[in-house]
Amino acid sequence: MIRKKFSIDEILNEFNHKSKLSDLISQFITLQPRGNSFVGKCPFHNEKTPSFNVNDEKGLFYCFGCKVGGNAINFLSKYKNLSFQESIKYLSEFAGISISSGNFIENKKDKKKYEIMRIANEFFEDCLKINDIANKYLDLRISSSEIVKKFSLGFCPSDKFLIEHLQKNKFTNDEIRNSDFFIKNKNNKFFGRFKQRIVFPIYSFNNQIVGFGARSLSADAKIKYINSQESDIFKKSNVLYGLKQNIDFIRERKEIILVEGYMDVISLYKNDIKTAVSSLGTTLSKNQILKMWNLCNIPYICFDGDDAGQISSKNIAMKMLEFLTPGKSIKFINLPKGEDPDSFFTKFNKEDFSKFKKESMDLSELIWQSIVEAIKENTPEFLALLDNKISIICSKILNKKVSNEYFKFLKNKKDQYVWKINKVPNISKNVKFTRKTDENINEKILIIFMIYEEKIFKEFIEEISELKFKNQELESIKKKILEIYCQNQYKFNLQYIDHLKEKAENFFLEIYELKKTHLKDLKSEEKFIIFRQILNNLKLPDLIKESKSLKEKILITKNLQDQSQLIKKYDKILGEIKKIKNKTT
Ligand SMILES: [Zn+2]
Image (cartoon, rainbow, N blue to C red):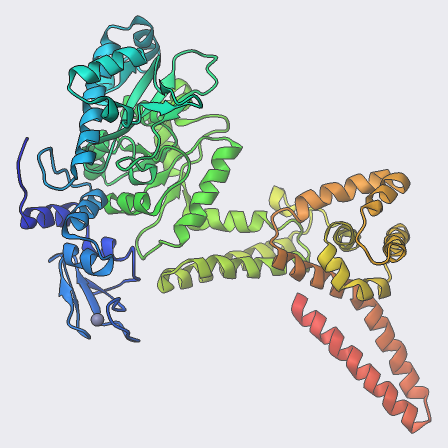
């Protein structure tokens, strides 16, 4: 379909059909649902109570305070200061409106780039047809010429042929050089990026080829996959690989499965799961998140079943928090260890995948897991950190309603967790609750702080030196470290470690391991909190002992002046005890 011009009405209609004005605007301001529309604080005038209304059905916004209103284009030009053409470009990218060639939107330079991508891909597709090695490879991996065609896969034989083909199509040498198929090396020479590779065209939200992924055919290639460089028309954060091919199924089923790579998308497609897309990696941009939420309320994330995949899932979970709104979330499909979606189907089938999908984990559950994983001991000091972490998580959720619900959910989880530890100490079969409590753990952690955390050590040195450890060996190590510190004119010194290595090698190894597990994920303010609480708890027995002896003294002292002084001291200690107990229970 080639059309010369689109009217504004047509573009707005298309936008309202494929996207929502509230999704567009909520990128910039927080909107709350109210009846059939959304309200928020007006970005165009200063106000305390929201009077800015967005109506998705009509595709219009209006502020009852300052009387500003209009459609999506008006909003962008007013809020982002975009020109008319820029606003339309923004809208078409945001909503994936396909405005085919001949439209008035892109500037000439961009248009040339789109053109060169399209022509090159046709060339790659033709080359694939006549290359045996590439075909054999795809037969092995995909074994369906229909799918190869559906995803417009191609093969790039050599730079020379590609250049000749582009020249034949009347592109100038400058245009060819700027096309992203070639990069300049150190000697200012251009060389191709994709030669002898299978190429996967990447489409923008409005269905134009904006870049390519390319896979090496040789097993010993240093780099298996290469992507196009980011350019004016290609932004990784603005595409979802596979969306173009799968959009009908995604709309029909209201389902999206986000996977890591090209082959994952294709592999799912081959196994009749035609709702997968890839963000070309394991990160997710705001645009990609909003695009997915436009198409379905709860997309699935399905990364590789290895440690890296798990970490990426958690990173995405954390990132999503900021954008959560009522009714929108994500779920995580956990594949068996060592499998990616591609390898999964060499052993399992579609029904098995459905089972994994059914057992997928809610975002809130994953968030709770990552909170509790950071807690290395079930001692009061570490349990107190849970509250801290819950608050931080909830503060990341900008939507107040969702944030409140998360707070309730996570608090409840914490209560259950604490209840379980108290109920079945050390004997539960559940691994999570079988952490042994090492009775000297606090003393050991305090020594770790003395060795590795200079700032905290310095700030609390007086209190540390007043402290008496119960464990004699630990007490002598603590004393030795303090001694070295004093001898060094109060300079932090790695001799502590040498000393430990010499005198107590096993102990050194133990605290080295403890440091790796117990302090690894803590931020500096969290370290302070933990340290403060450990110190307090270690002080507690001595304080209680002292309070008891003071009480006895008070009772036998006859001198009233002495007595009143003792009482003052006694009150002070009771106050300290009370403070510590309140904090840790
Ligand atoms: Zn206003």
